[in-house]
Amino acid sequence: LWLGMADAGRTTIQSLLDRNKSVGIVIGGAAEAMHSRPGTNDLTLSTRIGFIQCAIQSGADIIPVFTFGENDLYEPLISNKPGSMLNRLQL
Image (cartoon, rainbow, N blue to C red; front, side):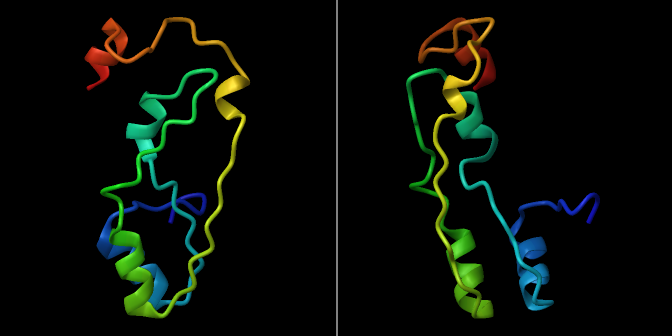
């Protein structure tokens, strides 16, 4: 754990939970960050269920948290709308 951060892979998360460590996961990760732009809240959740399986196996509680407004704090320097050149390059 460097500065309290760790890889979000299944084995790392399971290891931390097995040692009774609290774990916070940004479910959407980089994929969700790539699609952020002002005025939107596009979530990447439908295929991200591995953390639920890890929590069930270790008996950990899941506390859902949703934050909002980060996308409206700054204007992007380059448009990142779906289909834009930047968006295609990021994929």
